[in-house]
Image 1 (cartoon, rainbow, N blue to C red):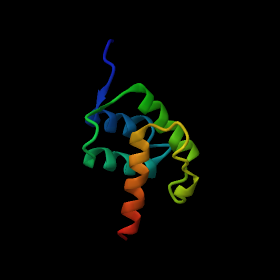
Image 2 (cartoon, helix red, strand yellow):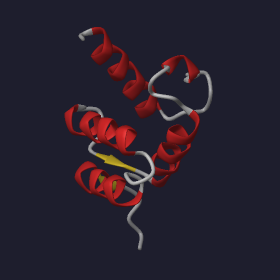
Image 3 (cartoon, rainbow, N blue to C red):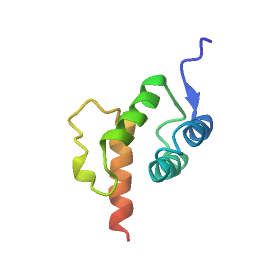
Image 4 (cartoon, rainbow, N blue to C red):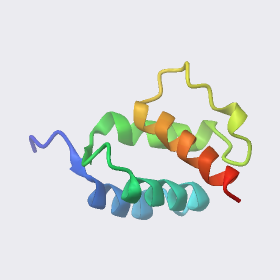
Length: 90
């Protein structure tokens, strides 16, 4: 009831259960990122809400649609940077 955050492992499971059917590629990449990043051990409801908004508004095939000046959580800024680095390594 009064829990304000959810651990990364549980968030990854929730992403798979709730959003994967609608956004399979995005969920796979985000859960991969969440498991390797070291900045966050838990996330809050604002992060969760922004994941859905991010999936709806940002095309992962063209990250130029991502505007870091918008009110995105830092974790999503970091995720986009991780995606760009991952793409450069290919």
